[in-house]
Image (cartoon, rainbow, N blue to C red; front, side, top):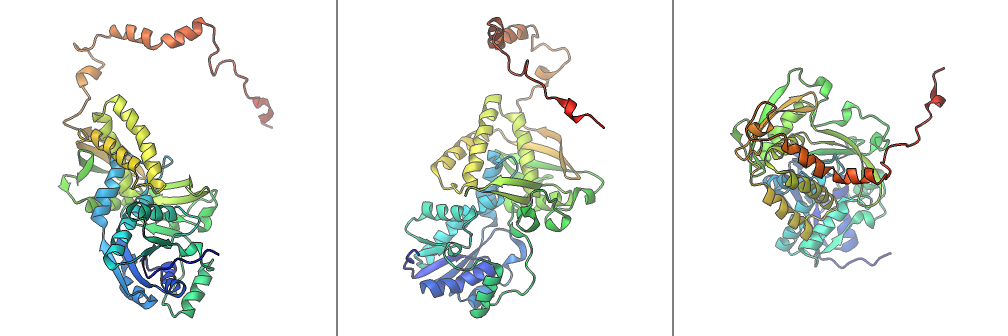
Length: 420
């Protein structure tokens, strides 16, 4: 067994749940250190109730709670929108983007209280341990890091409850949800329980932020989102702060069954996991932003930006928020966003987002160029020479009698599947 680090004071990323409640006395018992709890308010709703009493009752010397909702929205979520970052085609990175912000304040609080270590409750199987620890390494590598799940003998909820009872730690006696959930301003995720079977269809008891498309209103609802240099600033003509705007769209999207995702993803630690995500407001914002970009970005920039979006999402998912590459990609993204100014109108209907209109003072769309009617700006005969040049490689291949992929391939034998 590895020799334990010498620690005098530790700052614990604290949620108030069973695991972090047990971690407080465990740290004191195993490291003989003072424990300061830190909680980031990222919009996790009623999970913040009674945290101070819980933390002190568990043995913490103090708890520091910071309202980071606006910073989270403006400095972490809106960059995802501008970048168009989506992990493995579906995941809008709600948990991934929250961890570097929490890590930033774990370090800041450690400096404030004179701590020499930080601790977190992420398990040894998940991505969050990487995200927390890379964030701390990037901001202050002198701080020691303690991850109890990689050290202690606790292996189940029952073990944790026994430990809490033995140490007189007050924990709620209510029945634990069969799902592991993480909620913040951007989304809620659901894992575990029956979801571990990828063939199992989730029932409505899984969902929290959205009602089913079947139960959504029978009438569509229109919403207009205004952007300024790639950043959403108003909904239906009303200017809002970043966090307020997301909260508003969450309610609107949830009402219409928008933003549900069921996916099997590749975790950084090497295994696949199945999760359900609800991101109503984020899904609306991503769709609106894409539509505005289609109006104002030229072909080459949009194409390259799509490639950047994939790398950006991978970096955020892998905990590399505070990396030189992510900063460099942000510089590119921001350089493209000046003309992404305008308004997009969407129609929300039973889980669908239907584009109803888009406009921008920087639009590259010219009706006089695109029209199928008579025009004076486009000589259609010019297209003939372009096609000759563009298709020259295909012509050369044919003249040289080289094989064409997809032709003369063996066909499947469907006779084996004749009906009885």
